[in-house]
Length: 273
Ligand code: NAP
Image (cartoon, rainbow, N blue to C red):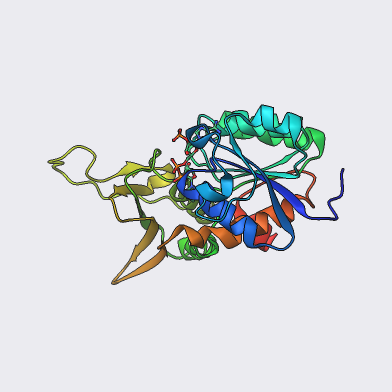
């Protein structure tokens, strides 16, 4: 495996999006990283720095990752695009020996598995993380701990109205972790005898874990996990109030992925091992 000993050369897919432009600003702040490419059909031809609200960087935004990697050496590709675009971007990056760090959510399991297999076969690092906010990772860990004591739980996730997928990847991962932590315990969800509005009790995940998705302008990314017990409730809540909240996690993943020889799923694996 190639050892990266100089600046980590980063390309950003989805460069002109809400997350992609934040990633460009974060990469430009890090002394051990260099932005060497930016991909986004929406702003092809523009300077990546200008797109991210910085001074010009001399890095043009291009339409297609394949063309870029044919001309540019890179160590890491960060992807915040769409569930449709991200698997193809990852396949191309891996073919060029570039490690994918994928934050795009809503990618189906088969595509995730394919990206994982491609990385592992080439002994190339990779990260797929549905939530790069360190506070959210802690929220999920605390929820998994509480689940051992409180079998009754509901998850409410709240996001901006531009989010394409529902429920969020974080809500699904939280439900998965809670379900695993409860092991043999199942919980019969209280259902209303009369449901006056279809879907009003949210969607049911494994073992009776209900998820409710709220979409409103003004929100960024928020989640509440509410546990109920006899005479008590426990609420664990995390709020990303700006997209800057995701950047320490993204920067950590860029640094760690160059040391890995396989794909890791979830920021928690990078933080807690
Ligand atoms: P966004 O503002 O819509 O940005 C996505 C950008 O990707 C758009 O500019 C889009 O261009 C571009 N794009 C589409 N196809 C592309 C391709 N093949 N190559 C390169 N760029 C392409 O969305 P966002 O709010 O930044 O969110 C992006 C993703 O990150 C979503 O899946 C979201 O759920 C996820 N997210 C993850 C985290 C996390 O912590 N993991 C946090 C926040 C958001 P067009 O507009 O022309 O399609």
